[in-house]
Length: 510
Image: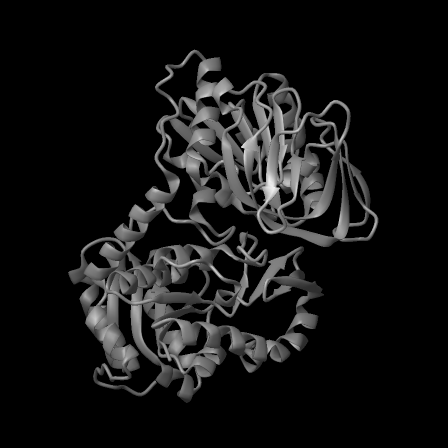
């Protein structure tokens, strides 16, 4: 049996995923075989495993930090919101349906055997399992059927570290209030508190830390700073989506759709000197960027209509007419076509007009394309000559089938890694490109080639476009994360907690 440690938080976005990833890296550096686990994840950023199964990218990031291949057992339940009250429900990597929140709450208790089986697979194969909770364990309206916070802690008999976010303010109330709202047996599971995202002089914080320990009877095992590391973000709460609108020599604008998914596709551009990557949600923010990126979305039709209603579609068409390159991935690719049809009501039903920049038509189907691919860029009009034949690897994950017309050339030639099938994929138009392949830009050759092409058009030096090996860059970031956490977490105490030892402070009644 593996040792386990669980990271829970006082709310969403307090840093649970990053703390869990850092612990995965530390334990790996210390010589252990480590696996991440999250029983239920709600996110639109997802990934396809080597077996063709779908899981949340946060656990993929943590698996990378642990140095292990991501498997769907690390995230047996994934919820992908389709609207404000419903989600696509994915169990063990496969879609079982789209449900309202109420319907899912009635179902989820029956999924406990699936969760238990997934956890046991990891428990038997690894030395340590780092479990991540979701939201807060003190959601008193949801606790009865909880399967992701204290409910999961009980299933795994896991000690819990509770994380609070001081950057938002009120961290002492966050931590104390969360502990106070728990049942007595749940409180006993919390073995340590972590104050995260701290900036400033630690000595000023010390009196509050001591009082918090006396009030809760739980030790503070770390005050972790706001670490300057570049890691993949879990979902649309990501701070990178709220970043600067400042324009650099090469200006890339990503359309921040309401249901944006897999925006991690574009992270590589952030590491190229002289490039600004901006997330844009209003027509007034767009300007005339060198490249407009249309990302994936969980609801292509509704997000296209959102762009049409708020003026962004017209702004994109105007910018394209003025010379901006446009590239759509997955749902963004579908939007660029002539029509999007939904005869079976997969999304909204009916047919909507597309943006008309590519001669393709999309029809939604109930089956979900879900596979890993590898191949090459096939067509390179308006891109550097050396980009033709550039290798790509990635994955497809979509509900629609897109058919090109006579005026659309294919963009890629790819092989389905799982089935071995070969096909031409994607489409090219006049300075417009679309593809279903998530990860198409992760190749240094492609990302830097696109930037060089944009620079050449503007008469900028060919020095532009230099980037680093993205996989190697991520490795350095995981090491930096581990280094930062080692300095500010009491790892000796955390190891004792995993061994079942008590780390005590003077108790106080709540």
